[in-house]
Image 1: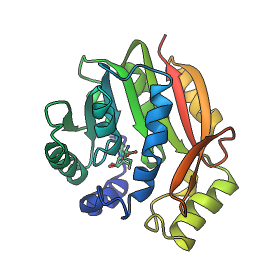
Image 2 (image 1 turned 135 degrees about the vertical axis):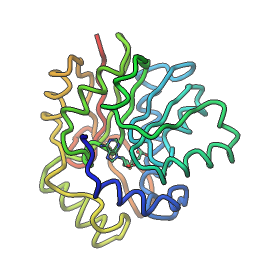
Image 3 (image 1 turned 90 degrees about the vertical axis):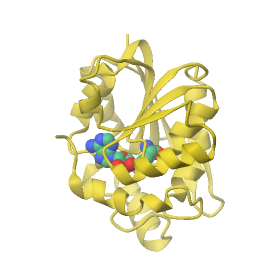
Length: 231
Ligand code: SAH
């Protein structure tokens, strides 16, 4: 199985904090609008069947449902999924979305394919991202879109995403990220092409933990979003 149990444990132990906008997951809340906009500017969310891989507590999944999509969220961690299900009920969204405990690889064994497949901030927690990429491609309908986000393996990313975020500013719990698991845009692009996808765009985003705002930037030196399509 292409899952690292130590990674899952990190997210299990923090599951209760998922929807605390000032808690451990606050960067995910703060960056959510720009990633939804990134998707909305490149694909039609309204009415789309979306698979959100590694959905965690459902921050992105719920937003996509609010924008008219019919999302399915999958994650190997049960705690975050339980929180996601409860939160959807609280928001009255439970009939618009479904959550299952699964990975992209496992879920791709089903015959269903999706208009949009998202996998945000998960590939740097997966042992072999190329294997996940193949599953993401299998899960996408012909003509459909794949949206990813992850962190670049560059020294400047170590400085901001690990030293800055985990040790100086305490924006993220220590140990959230490991530098060697970060992925260069060229590596992600190659994996996407090898999985039969066409790479459309790589776009950096910057996050300011003081103003708690995020914006798209041209260079993908630290965090970046990635769009590919299945021909
Ligand atoms: N995608 C969500 C959550 C990101 S946190 C968001 O951006 O809002 C990272 C998530 O990846 C966690 O929920 C964790 O359980 C999940 N994850 C870790 N390893 C995974 C794997 N091998 N396959 C799918 N998801 C995984």
